[in-house]
Every structure is written in C-alpha cells, then in structure tokens.
Image (cartoon, rainbow, N blue to C red; front, side):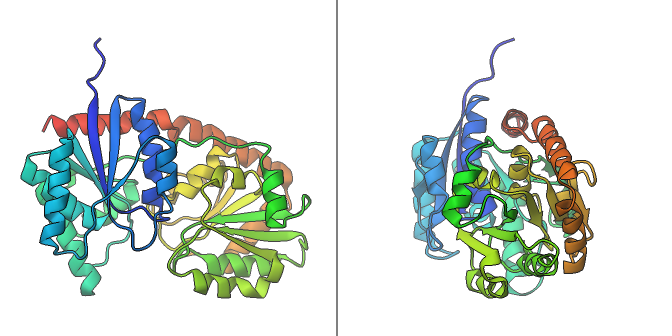
Length: 375
C-alpha cells in the first residue's frame, strides 16, 4: 500500500492567547507531522497577548499575524486572502468564530477547501453574541466542507441550534502530544513555595467566569480543618484574573496563583489531585493533561467531560452544575485515600494511551482532511 500524499494545511485562528484552542495548535503540529501533514498557523489579533506562540516555535512553526482591526475589515480580509494565495495550502483549518468567518470566506474565494473545529459547548442565541454566532455559523455552512465538534455533547448542543446539517457535523475527540515529566514536581513545589509534605490540589483553566474557581476555593476552605497541609495551585490566566484573585484571597497562602505556565506537565508532577468544577466545557485539555500525567481528577459532569472521565474508574464526577459542597465531599474522600488516588491515576493514564494519545488523534485528523479533500 502506498503512503498517503503529504498535505499542507493552514490553520487560521482568532488569536494565540492562553485558551485551550490556541495551546492545542502546538500539539497539532507534532501530531499532524507524524501523518504527513505540514501545519502552518495564521492568527488574526494579538490584543490579548501571544502566550501560545512559544510552544509552536519550539515545534518549528512560526505563526504569522494577519491583523484584523474589526469584523468587517475589507483590507484585513484581502491581506488574509493574499497570504493564503501565497501559501496555497491544500486545505484551511479554521478555529474559533472570527477565523471561521474570515478564514472560511478567504479560502472559499480561492477555491481552497476548508474545515472548521468548534471548541465551544454552549451557543448564545440572543443579543450581540447571538448575532455574531449566527454569522459564524452561516460562514461554516457556506464555506466549510466539514464542521468538527470536539465532543458528542458539543455536537448535540450545536445541532440543537438548527444552524447546520447533521450530516456535515462530525465528532473528533482531541488528543495531546505532551509527555509526563516525572521527578520535576519537587523543583516546581520549591519554586512555588509548596512544601514536600503539602497536599496539593491543582486547577488548570482559563481565569474566566464559569470555570469554577469559586467552587474550588470554597471546597478547599471547607477541607482545611481536616487537612491543614492542603494547598490549592491555580494555573492559568484570563480576562477575569482580578476576580479570581479576589476569590482566592480568603485562603491566604493556602492558594497559589501561578499565571499562565507553558510547562503544565511539569507542574502536574507537583499535584496530587486536579479539580475541574466547570459549569460548561466542550472537551477540556486540562483533563487530558492530568490523565497523561497519571493525576486523578474530580470534575463536574458538564459538556464533554463524561466522554473523558469514566466516573469511579479513571476519576470522579460530580453533578453539573457544580456545587461547592459536592466538590468538597468528593475531593475529601480522595484526599483521605492515597491508594485510591494512585489507582485512579494509573487507570486514567491507561485510558489516555488508548483514547487520547497523539497517534490516534493524528489519524482522526488525517481522515477528516482526506474526506474533506475528496469533497
């Protein structure tokens, strides 16, 4: 059997900031390289910084800013079209709403096939956000040959809007190309002021309303009496940083906020349990990272999370929407049982290897591209 032909794929994304979609592009570059796909990256704004650029550069991909000053920016669209014309990729893969609209239109005008990945699990239908999302959906329907949801739950939520044809919308679970960093946790703890005998609960998420930082803070406060060495390590940055800092302030030195960290796998080696009490999430990368690092998780059964965590086997799920008391109860049971923590972490690692490792993800993406190119 002959090898599949090499493909050039241009990823177009809204920004290269600290979000999950942005940080996944570096993993995609590695994953796709193994299946004969060369990935290039174009982003449309740097207003919120470029925290995710460094990881791409480490993998030999230099992302290009083709700046859009506003949604209806004719000169910006022409610049994007000219850049895609210069590169002449076999396919354009858009991520996030503005890229779906602008990148999809630019690709179609050049006769270049495109696909779009949906990274959200909740779709506003009213107000200004609803108007924008409907415009993005029209662009996907008119321009993209395939629309990819990262979980079955996200696919169902998107189709419930009536914005697209179910035959065009497929589910492809993300994976990651990140390796555990055993042995590095001790240095991380020392650098962050955490003692070797502290029990460290981690939370890796964008600092944004709805991610559950308030539930995590209250749960830790409830458990400190029984576990005085308990510490909460909050990893990430985002638009609500000041609000999260205020939420964590009553915990004093029991809470450590690190900001954005490019070395999440090393940080996870310093963590005993990861919590993810989010109100909504399509397919959180943090849970895949924890599984890869053999760290047990307590998460809300929101969105696509039950497609990642097998409750009671590879982690613990609490009902959604989350409540602080339920989180404290589930977390407290794990903190009191180190043997169960170890068992859940080992089982999570095995599930990661079978379901979410880079090679399987790469094969799924290559199959998507080949199907889109076949029309």
